[in-house]
Structure formats: C-alpha cells, structure tokens
Length: 338
Ligand SMILES: NC(=O)c1ccc[n+]([C@@H]2O[C@H](COP(=O)([O-])OP(=O)(O)OC[C@H]3O[C@@H](n4cnc5c(N)ncnc54)[C@H](O)[C@@H]3O)[C@@H](O)[C@H]2O)c1
Ligand SMILES: N[C@H](C(=O)O)[C@H](O)COP(=O)(O)O
View (tube, rainbow, N blue to C red):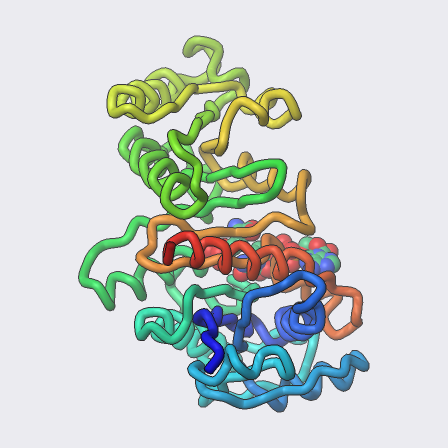
C-alpha cells in the first residue's frame, strides 16, 4: 500500500471572494508545482458552480480527511461542511459567516486530531466577519484562541509575511495607526523577536537567525529628537534580546531597511506596525509572499492577499500566492516531522 503524507487542510475563506477559484486553480497546477496534497473544507456545490462559471474542468471528490491524500492526484478533495454557500461572487453576505468560521474551526480540529499536517487559509474579509459578530482582529488572533481552547496554554501569535526576497514581521497588527505608539511595548517586541528567532530555526532551518529591528519614528527617532519611542521602547528590547543571545540589531531607520543590500544583512525584519512590514513585503512579492502565523502549536499559512471582491468570479485571480502558501506549509510540515 502506498504511504501518503498527511494532507493540508485548506479553508474556503469568504465564498464571495476569490478563495474558491484560486483553490480550483491551485489544484489544477498541482503537478506543475509538485504541490503537497490538500483538501478543501467547503461546499462541493459552490465549488462546482464556480468551476462551471469560469470554465474550469476540475473533478471534485467529497471525502473524509483520511481519504484526501490518495484521491488528490485525480480530483480536488472536498470535506463538506454543515454550512452551504451560494455561488455569488463579489457579493459578500454576513449570512456566510458561520460557514466561514466552521471551515477554520474544522481545519484546526483536523490538525489537532492528526488528520491534517497544517492549516492553510483562503482570505476572509474582516468587516464581513465583524458585522457577523466575530470579535477577533483576524485569523491570526482567532487561531491563537482556538489553540488555547485545545491546549489550555496561551498562544502568542506572530504574523510573518515571508517571500523569496523578504521576511517581515509586524509587532502590532490590526490596530489603528493612532494607537500604535501606546500599544508598542518593550516586552511585546522582545516576545515577538524570541518567537521569530525560535521558529526560523525550528520551522525554516535557519540557525542563529539575524533580526533587523526597525525604529518607529523617522530615522529611528534621530537619538530621541524625533520621538522618544525608539530610545525608550525599542532600544531596550534590542539590548534585552542581545543579552539573551539573539542576533538582533536596532532600532534601524525603516526607510533604508528594505533595499537589496540591506536585505542581505538579515533573515527577518521586525517592524513596529502593520504597513511598515506589509508594504515592503507585498511590494517585493505580491504574487509569491505568504502570510505565516508563528507561535501556534500548529502550522498555518495563507496567501498574502485578501478576498479581492472586485475580481471574484471573473477568472483573473492569480493562484500564485496560494500555491506558495501550500508549498511553504508542506515544507514546514516536512521539516517539523523530520
Ligand atoms: N489572509 C486574509 O484573510 C486577508 C489578507 C489580506 C486582506 N484580507 C481582507 O481582504 C479584504 C480586501 O482587502 P484589500 O482590498 O485591501 O486587499 P486584496 O488583497 O483583497 O486586494 C487588493 C488588490 O489586489 C488585487 N488582488 C488581490 N489578490 C489577487 C490575486 N490573487 N490575483 C489578482 N489580483 C489580486 C485585488 O483585485 C485588488 O485590486 C479586506 O476585508 C481585508 O481585511 C484578508
Ligand atoms: N494583515 C494581513 C494582510 O494584509 O495580509 C491580513 O489582513 C491577514 O490577517 P489574518 O491572517 O490575521 O487574517
């Protein structure tokens, strides 16, 4: 009997977005990209309708997770949810929220049950979920909550955008820009860097990773003359990290941190807020960067883009970032199993 590695559990994301069609396209490219086996937690009727709408010939197989890997070569395995979705691209509907969450919950449950090697998520629209009563900023924090519910241990999730040219980590994530200076603490910077250093070693095979810590203010505060946070919050964090044996440098001016020669000097840039990390990450690699959540007791990756409601159902969405997310999850799982 052939031995199949555990498949990846792929969530459907918002069904009105591009998640369903990039999942179909990723499956079609499975041989070209040597993708690890995955199954979609979704609704076969929705997937059949979206494939038909886009003229994509994708055989679908409703399966249990245990049957997914052996079926993957010949059909896109779908593990059905209780929830059903309409094929209504570009029209997000709060009525889809329970099904969107069921897909995420089930992916995590399957991973804890040993039926899946990792969780890969298609994009959700935060506003739609918030309107449906979701009280977490995004997947990142929700996944940490699901982990805690299962292990009883607090998880500190860390967002990393990882591409061939840059790995970038925002210390504060989905909070208003005006709230960043108050939210940023030395302890959070230290904790984030510790998790990044440990996970780069464990899950990416980078021994002694080099971390470049960006400043918050222009020119990293210019010795405290343009804002005090770099001297009072960031610098003590870097000192504590260095004392603990972590190769961290900073605070470094963020404007000169992302050009080619600078990027050669570190393995991850630690940034103080969302756009400081995600603008360079998506500019340098919108099609191949992956959103990875570190600090969880399981592997989670996601494409770097969102639901792209403007193009859903039009047949122009590129599956590249999802393909990269599936490959990275497979690589991370293989390294963790070795
Ligand atoms: N992982 C996630 O769940 C995730 C990530 C980012 C944004 N979001 C959410 O997505 C929603 C929309 O966000 P946004 O509009 O800022 O960003 P977006 O990434 O959805 O779209 C930005 C632009 O890029 C284009 N684009 C995105 N993905 C593409 C692809 N695969 N192929 C071709 N073009 C693509 C879109 O058409 C749009 O013009 C928001 O609600 C946001 O919260 C979710
Ligand atoms: N900030 C992420 C991005 O722009 O790519 C994104 O919104 C995803 O967040 P979650 O993985 O927490 O849903």
